[in-house]
Image (tube, rainbow, N blue to C red; front, side):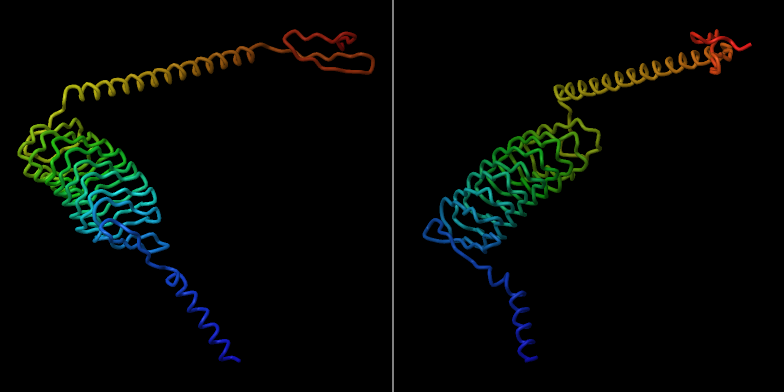
Length: 310
C-alpha cells in the first residue's frame, strides 16, 4: 500500500512538472511558394519560415518572431498583426522586403532585424524605445520618421542607407557609433537639443553631409563638419525662453504682491489688536433684586431692569 502511494505521488509530481511542456505544440501556417512557417503554441512564437516566398500575412496567434525566423527568405512584403510585440535579432535579415509598416503593439526590435534588405519606406511603432544596432543597415531606406518614444539609436542602425536627410526627435538622448556610417547621400541632419551623448564617428564616411543642425548646450564631439543653429530654430528657442522668463517673472511678481498684501493685513490686524488693548475697560456690578451681573466695557451699562451696585 505504501509503495502504491509513493508511486501515485511520483506520477502526480511528474505530471505537474511536465504539464506545461506537454501542452506546448508547434503548428504550421501556409505562406507563399507552397511553404509553411511554424509557430510554437500557446506561447505564440514564430520559429521558422525561411522557405516562404512573396507576400506574407502573419497569423494573429503570433506574439514574438524568433531570431533568424525568416533569415534569407524571399519574402517581399509582410503584414504584421497587432498581436506581435517583439521581433528578434536578424528575423528578416537578407529578405526582399521593400516596405515596412509595424503596428504600435511592437515594443522591441532586435539587432539586424531588417538589415541588408531593399526596404525603402518604414513606419515605426509609436511604442518603440530603442532603435537597435544595425536595425536598417545596408537597406535602401530613403526616408524615415523616428517616433518621439525613441530614446537611443544604436551602432550602425542607419548605416549604408539611401537617406538624404533625417530629423531626430527631442526624445533621443544617445546616438552610438557609426549610426549613419557610409551614408553617401546624406546631406542634412537635425540633432535634438536634448542630446546628452553622441559618438564622434556617428557620421563616418558621410561625404555629402553639409549641414548638422543643433542648438543645444551639450558639448558635442568634433564631426566632419561643424554644427550650426538655424536662425528659425533659434528664434523658436529664444521665444520659448522669453515666454518662460516672462511667466517666471509674473509668478515672482504675483508672489511678491501676495506676500505684501498678507504682510499689510497682518500689520493692520496687529495695530487693531494693539489699539483695542490700549482702550481701558471698566467692570461694574449690576443687581436686580437677588440677581447679580457683571458688565465689562469701555463705558459699561447695566441691562434694562438692573441697577449699578453701590
